[in-house]
Length: 258
Length: 72
Image 1 (tube, rainbow over the protein chains, first blue to last red):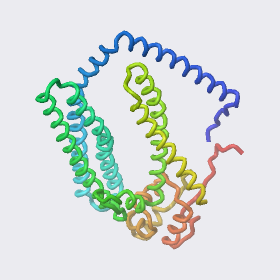
Image 2: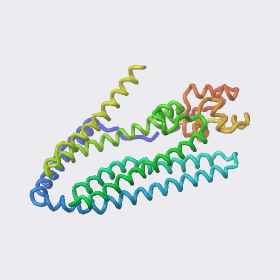
Image 3: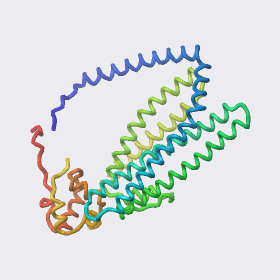
Image 4: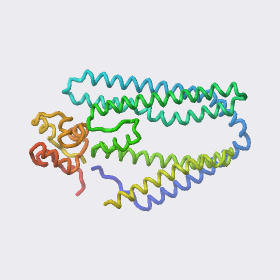
């Protein structure tokens, strides 16, 4: 084991104090800058952002989904081909197939969450920016139809991937269209898989905790300088409290069982 | 800290693949593979199950070696 220089208590407190001071200074600068922008450029910034969104949102919504699902399905079919050509002896091939299948589903999982944002954004730009009904409808209808298409594609890809994982690991249980899928899947995981899920969940918890802190500050600043209302802050609050609450309660429950 | 092990040798002696070994001890092929690679240390329960299936002792399959750079 490498020798690690132990931090002294004094070093820890000094670093913490410096972080607090840096936070205060950054907050002051951001606040001053935000107020200046709000006073002098409020309308211009809003108009600029809206113009970019009207072009950017549809392009990103379609473009990213095309890339993700073409990649996802292509990778899945490559893995399927590898499995059909497997000689039944070399077990490292199975490892590679499982990795490919994992890679196939990863971007689509992220895209699923992103699509809810893109769908909202499409409705927003169609509702508020089009001056008349004839201009609003096509964009809104397109947004709805494309969103439904992405849900269908996601469902198909997930079904294919889960079925392949079950073929590679016959002990796995669960149908992704079943409301009990997550429960059945976890129950069929062994000690290593549960450990991996736990470690991944903890990493997710830490990252989300940081993001919630940043978003809490950001939404407050945006509310103060651009008068967006309390709703964005409230949304962040709900997510953050759910995260902290479930994690803390689950930890307490696990401790109690011991 | 992962354990050194001879699981692959014992599995070859039994004439089973990783999938079959996993089924015999109640775990997945992935876990057997990671144990053999030294990327995962099984729980005591799993190690005992593996030893029982291989008809040997845990010490015959798994070996713990102290890291030479550990501080005393």
